[in-house]
Image (cartoon, rainbow, N blue to C red; front, top):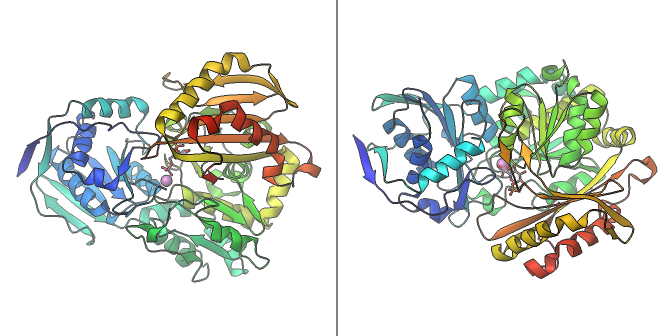
Length: 542
Ligand code: VG1
Ligand code: CO
């Protein structure tokens, strides 16, 4: 029943910031997914008879891909495959299952916030036994293997019924279809004060959560509406759809603008929130107050002790380099370490495993803790709810007080999406070459105090990761960061991250664009963005 199929390598199977992402038709090409999955298995050792967790975000080709992964995993010697019903598992829920059931690892099928559908994006990533994304040395080994692969192994068997809960035997192993929500909901109940949050809803607190027709719908309905008593209708777009209803499941101010408008209306809900395709990102908007992800990380860290799961305090905070330094102020005040890592959750794994950091976050709307080894959208929303219930204050009040105490880091990200790769690479090359001459340069009222190409030395395993973004620091505490995205599937995407610190409460309430205007203007000239990309304006501002 096990077939060994001859194959030849496909080009470009190098995982990016978070797994391998390509256009759906590329993944549908016979052998493409199979080659990559076999390359993963070929780089692992000792999984004979062990458990593999498999699930995805429900996008187009999810079910077909899961059948292939199941049959290949069993053919390669895994003993037990745990699959979310309907092929559904949010990224944080998959991470939890790997940890809870002592699985050898997991395979998650998702291109996260990228659009789905026959012409959209598809993706796959491998998570290790700690529940976290495979570290760079593993993803690089997988890529190397994909270049020499000549065979893959797969069971010649009928498809598994993904919608029927229960276990079935296949070859020498078993496939178990499990409720994707139950274990995750149970974990959330252990971390947060559900009675208190339920009390908040009872007192009339209004939540509007948009699952964006992606994976979190079933989780959100169970947790917010059934377990916590949020009013029916609090969860929008709760059914995962193969094309996400034609939308980008990206919870930012562009793709979730309707939530922003709702939250800004005088009678808006107390909290508007959303998550992305695979459920690991979060959007937080209180009535009249949007919370930037960088601020959210800082505020969650400062208030985490109000939730039972963190009552003992947190051990450290980790943030990706481009994330604003708002969290640094909190770490300083709490007297705990702050770690600055490259972009991508895989860099937090070692710090979490070693107990050096408890809470981690990225400016791209990812926040999480040591409860799993992925960022976790619903977790962040539940922690906000727990804090709001415990403090009995509005989001806006908590934000204003936080800034008054710690200062405000005005922050914005400019994305130039799908520009020509050659131009984007030339921009980075030119800017990198200019770095040594930038220090001390005066431009208008601003002076560059430091400029470098960020490199990370992992304090746990000693590995080094170079070229993780260009940082330009200014004497007044401002900062501009440039880096190229590692999750896109067409051309290149340039991200420009702009930040300025404002300690004076009297000046903390101006518009972000106005507060950052000089740095924004400078960011264009400094990197000659128009010249290299041909773009006069970014495609998305967050
Ligand atoms: C982006 C974000 C990064 C995040 C990654 C995966 O990567 O900037 O912070 O970890 O997406 O998120 P990049 O390389 O495009 O900047 V998810 O929710 O798409 O798994
Ligand atoms: Co995601």
